[in-house]
Every structure is written in C-alpha cells, then in structure tokens.
Image 1 (tube, rainbow, N blue to C red):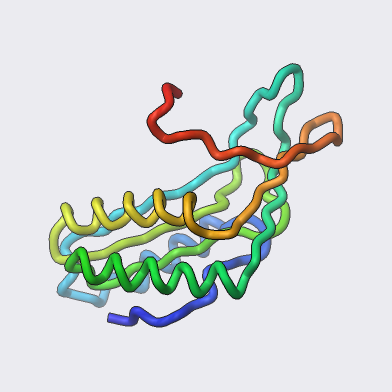
Image 2: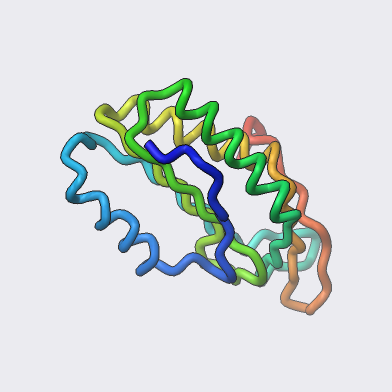
Length: 152
C-alpha cells in the first residue's frame, strides 16, 4: 500500500482516457475484488438569471497535498484498501467535464464504497481548493459548496 504524499492536481479537465488508463492498470492486481469510483462533473447551475459555463479551480497546492496525505493515511487506517487514487483539476473546467476522480480499491465492496465516499466528503471540507464559477455572460463569482444533506 502506497500511502505517501502525492500531487493530486492535474491541469484542466480530467480526460476519460486518463480515467480508463488508471482503471486498466489495476487488472493485474488479483487481490482486488471491488473498485469504487467517484467522478465529479461541472454542472450548468443556474444562479439567478445566469448559467455556469465553467469553473476555474485554484488551490494552495503544498498545503492541499499535505492535507490529502493525512486524509489518505487516516482512510487506510480505517478501511482495508488495496489502493486509493485522487485527482483534482486546476484551471478551467467546462460544463460536462470531469474535475474530480476518486478511485478506491479493496478486496470487498463495502470498504471501497465507504472509503470513496469518506474521501470525497473530507476533501470537499478540508482541502484548500477554490472554484470560481464563470458564467455564460462572462461574469463570475466564487463557488459555495452546498451541504450534501440539502435537497437536490
């Protein structure tokens, strides 16, 4: 298990071929019985009379990577995982594109699913990552993450 510090950031949208390649690399790992994958996609949210066309992500990279390493360590302590990968976009990501890819693998599905969900929740709360919503009319505002318990 590699639980060390890694740079989780990729420039721009996370391409489907990148995701497929990461999944394919696990085919030879015969102790894995389950994968849980979360893909965060930019939505065309309506804010008043404006529509989001993209989000521009920025971060405090060194701190975010240190914090993500701490989260990884605690996740590996809680769940019996084979591996876990996290990638988050920086820069501009357009509506319909992937901005977050979390991939947890384990011998059994419950550990992979629970770990994946916890990682997503924690990184949204704990990592210094900011998103500026860019609207179709070329105006912008800082994105506010909504409470996951709110109705959708």
